[in-house]
Image (cartoon, rainbow, N blue to C red):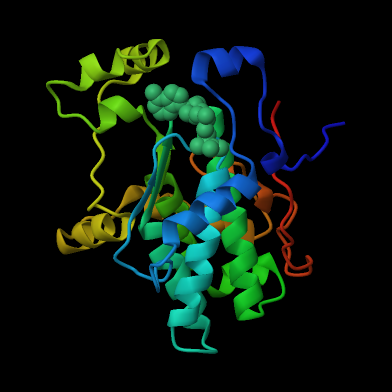
Amino acid sequence: MTKNTALDAIFQRSLERVKNLGEVFTPPSSVEDMLRLLSQGRKGFWGDENHVFFEPNCGHGNIVIGIYRKRLQALYKKAPPHSENAALYAVANAINTLWAIDIDAKNVHQCRSRVFLETLVFLQQKTGIATQHGLIKQHKNFIAHLLCAINWHIHENETLSCLSDKKTAKANAKKTRSGAKWFAEHGHRPMTFDLSWTEYYQQCEQDNLADIAYQRALRFLDQYLAGKFRKSREFQFADCLAGQSSDKTKPATNVKAKAGG
Ligand SMILES: C[S@@+](CC[C@H](N)C(=O)[O-])C[C@H]1O[C@@H](n2cnc3c(N)ncnc32)[C@H](O)[C@@H]1O
């Protein structure tokens, strides 16, 4: 039987991964200390929509989750009180100003899953909607955007090359053995921090183009709402919805994401 384990309590997976990827995760208490230092003396720091955060080696997401939680709470406080829209406003702004990458697909998957689950829990708490099914039924379009935004903002990439221009990307990726290997397989994926999911989607609308990922997210949620949840490779990080495909399910709790090894 697979045990559900709290990911934030896993600091190393194997010596091989430490050697190949430098994979040692930051404990949540240290994340808290770092974020306290970051915001020290900067009033309104976490609630400022103009701040954009980038986690260049996100791992399974300890720092991402630390930032995301602070952003959600601070942005929610800033929005008009007692409205459902306040929670949606907080989520939309928090995800559209947070970027995270990692060279390792498993880490990206786990980081996305945690952000998705964190969002469902936050939305249920703030809107008072009792079930995940109810939440998705009432805010299907928003959750479809959330699914796309998570894929867009948290993705597999190589830090040194993605921050470089076309000419120097390969040479920079080669500075580490794992970077060179990744670059040979995936090539150059430059980051464009100005192009958030929302910006991108609005550009599609202006050009009268239907975004395919968004259409697929809607279909994924329709199947879920119809009680026919089907796993999707694209939205695999939302597999926590499996078994929750009924409006009688209990409120989301911060279920521990499954640790894969
Ligand atoms: C020391 S861990 C830190 C994880 C996370 N930031 C934390 O503090 O919990 C380093 C992470 O960087 C990733 N990584 C290693 N080389 C990388 C590269 N060239 N580009 C992007 N990510 C890389 C590894 O997969 C690993 O998850």
